[in-house]
Amino acid sequence: MNCPNCGRQDSGVVDSRSLGDVVRRRRKCLACGARFTTHERVHVHDLFVIKKDGRREDFSREKLSLGIRRACEKRPLPTGAIDKLVESIEAELYKMGRGEVSSAHIGDLVMEGLRKLDHIAYIRFASVYRTFADIGDLKQEVDSLAERGELTPTNQLPLPSCETVSALAGRKRR
Image (cartoon, rainbow, N blue to C red; front, side, top):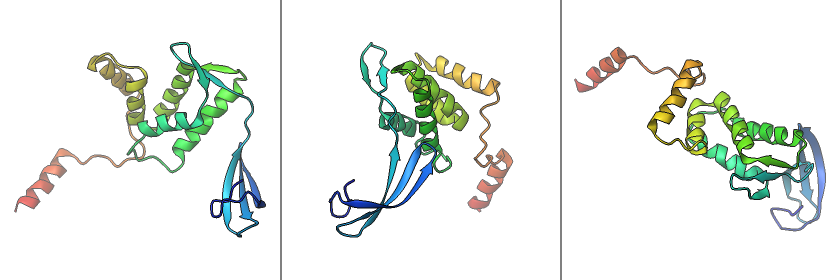
């Protein structure tokens, strides 16, 4: 492990803690004395993603995380919620025990996780993943969320009523 301060590879472990399937290690550089933290994950086996066009590529946790982060951009989510979602999807993929997984299956897992996490992020991801042909397809997806009662935000303040907005607007004009 290279020291982020001096670049040397000599470091000792000061503290080690297991955080689920990640090991957090507090390290101290033996050359300069700087302390830093590493998060280590066990790499069980290689996992390949089969793309829609038949190509195969290595599974990339970073690519999965980036796609989810784009969908959740500027959303009021709890700290660490995206990382937990990425970890749960990755764990599910490795738990399957297969060497290859389709990109469609990964997309479905992301959709399921985002639907539970944030409805706006879900619609954003769905608009790219499902490539809606027109606004009607998008409306149909939003309507299906509404029918299931999943459009009620749980972590946001309610919008003010029209009367409240009118009253506030009237006060500012005076």
